[in-house]
Image (cartoon, rainbow, N blue to C red; front, side, top):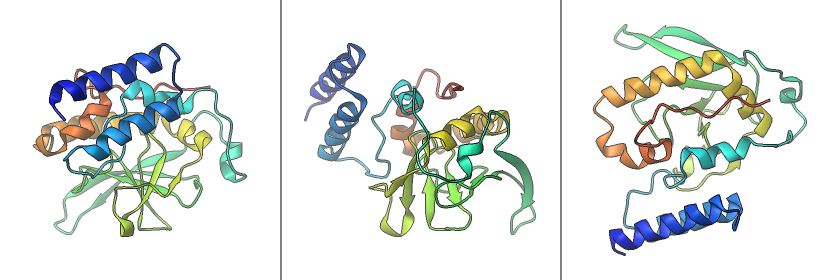
Length: 206
């Protein structure tokens, strides 16, 4: 498939979604189908989902499940912490204090592996889980990152993005990532954030 054909296909998908001709699930299916046809590094399932599409996941959604998240209100769902690595260097973390569907999540500064997103969460109680907080996707690293195995609770993700501590930490993490020299080999991930402004975060939701 030529680059022109790819651009035309993506444009038609964007246009169809903008005018309400297709819903978000169809939009995502078309983008991922294109992704599967391309000869690219299949590390991030959401490479072709623009930021404003990701935000649609949080609009008008009700809580799923019956766990602690039902009692969440706008405010702090976690906290920033400092720790030291094996070389005694200071590292910054963000760790949730309210459990999600399966576990709490910890987000590491300048993660050695920036997939599936920057930042992404590591399961505290379930260490082989990773969370993409933009799309809610949960991955089991034992099975690779080609396919998500579950989605985090919608209200939980909304509360996460409403937490100023998390927003501050995320913005800082993205800026550090962009200065780290890893951008070149992770161009596809940056595409979903918007190349013009990759530091634009999902909006706060009521």
